Image 1 (tube, rainbow, N blue to C red):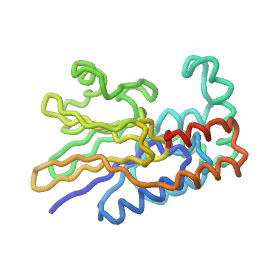
Image 2 (cartoon, rainbow, N blue to C red):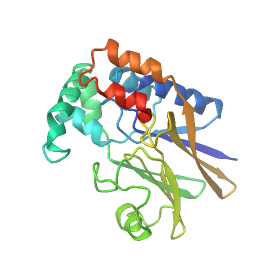
Image 3 (cartoon, rainbow, N blue to C red):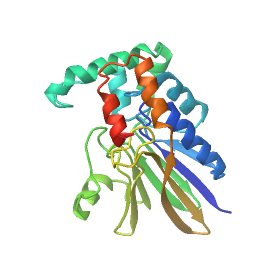
Image 4 (cartoon, helix red, strand yellow):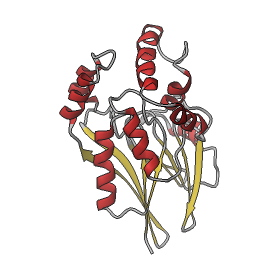
Length: 240
């Protein structure tokens, strides 16, 4: 029997994009979906994004943006000139959520390991030891091994955080970044997520890109009186 698993992440309050991705996942008859963090912060619909994730009744891990929603952005975590602006956005996001939502985000674990049909998958948001470290697609093989492969028995390592999807093969293992549902940074105006398919011991990994209604999200930012509305310009320049 085949097993198809989807991994999604970095929704960033963009429930419109999440709707499109979940519709695509349903159409592909995928058995399981896992969420690798960054659910609410930096988008116009933080509450609905969280509700959609919770409705999946699946394993969810914490991202750096989830940590920020709970306790704010701290000095040293972003450039000094961005600190005040990012905390304005954090405060707006937190105001859309209630105490139960905040407790949920606070309680999320930081890693997950699953085994299907003899294939072990180790997933985390940024690295196994950090919610914040950045590991880019061009990292040398040695760097990927040092920074990402802490679970020696894992066949597949999956992470998010950088909003730039890719797949590489190192030391007999698959390393996959699944990109971002709500805020891609690779210039393609489409949501991104990853699929792992296991067929009789064979493994296939793929990145899926899904069309989303970017202009609707832009309108939502404006209607919500979102702080730092210059982010709309970023959206229109294909960061979504």
